[in-house]
Length: 345
Image (tube, rainbow, N blue to C red; front, side):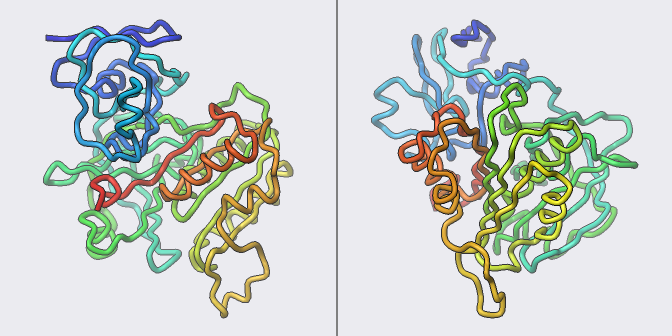
């Protein structure tokens, strides 16, 4: 059995099998719904159910509260339809543009620019053309079927020869995948992955000034977006704020400085929340989103692209809209939800 789902205001319609979520069916058919984690943890896919009935799978209350559900809001990533449905959701031009592929990748290199960050480069198979937008992510398929998501850190125009993607992976001690990356992963190993996924990428039809907001390895998709802007000659004013604990956590600080030198429209502001005495840090300190608010108290004509820890993303979204007049629809985010975040542990 399948159900028909109509998406307003776009007027797009698609079918959902009875064992599928609203989002999984949309991705399968190239319908560009907004989403992030696909695990009921981030809330990026939140939409309004205008007609019909759904049953929700497991999800985090912070992503969809009981009150929001009572008001007719749904998480498309974990909602399965029980009837035909009408959904109110902003469609994302380009989100379903490229086919989702399962493919092997070969480890070219593993570098550790910080003690708990690995930059890995993965060679793509020559017979499969992985196409993606700067800011999107892939999922690694582990031997037990579990999945782990990581954003591409290079723009699609910078895959090189042979074609390869770059990923930034933070070590989560005890993590099934990251323990392997930091312990046993070596050159020429094969990793299976699927992608591209996600609706976090630059909206190029706008001319608004941009704030790129990153914490930790949330810098990865932000780096890809900067490369995209450079390669496409996009000259919109850009402010890059990268928040980390101490200076060693700014693992590509020199890259960001060089990018700001190469792009006259790019301003780079590193922010440390807990600088160490040996850092001799004279730059900005505190919570990174609060530094943005101090510099840009009026965000009414900006677009924000935020990526990193869920607490940073949630705080920025709340405060920018409530206190800096940011239009809610101009906040684009990818919260880096860990397995612990997804399961509420």
